[in-house]
Length: 244
Image 1 (cartoon, rainbow, N blue to C red):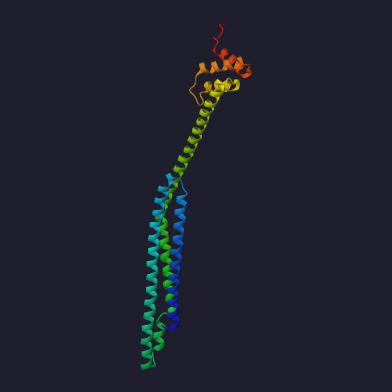
Image 2: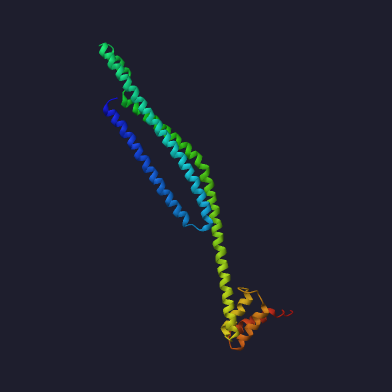
């Protein structure tokens, strides 16, 4: 191993350390962003999101640890190869000093450092590809289950929104009933008519035909046209059918 090869090895090791520090910084940043997203979620969704984050964090740590171990193994292989080449170089040099023959033959049978590096690099790329395929195969069932969970959650949230809208409408009708009842008792014909319609439809109050007719009668006495027409239509509906 000459000085240039040793310097190349040192640069590769420093690059690995820098890349590791960069990955750790990115990991911390992603973790902070995930915690902020969870904090902005509704309280009922935070627990599930936190569990998903912990599961993803455990999986990422396992993958990162495996990658680190693999990189260390590759560097160890590089160092071993360089050491072997260095030792063989010393042996060849000593052989050349004692015998002027056979040095070219021995040297031609030894692979060059660059060829060995390329071979190890190809092995590392193949192993990384196979490991990525295994990880994708492991994550496929989890992704399918997650998609199903998200679909069920979306349906539940849609149903909750619909229920909330219905409840808001019911609350509005109840408040209108209280408001119209006060104005109807004060003698407002329009409020009496609207209150009668609420009794007829059962919106915001229990359905009561008798109470509806009483309020319609009060509004009709004050000359409310719609109340008069409604009373006539109710009377016609209650009238028995004439025999043929």
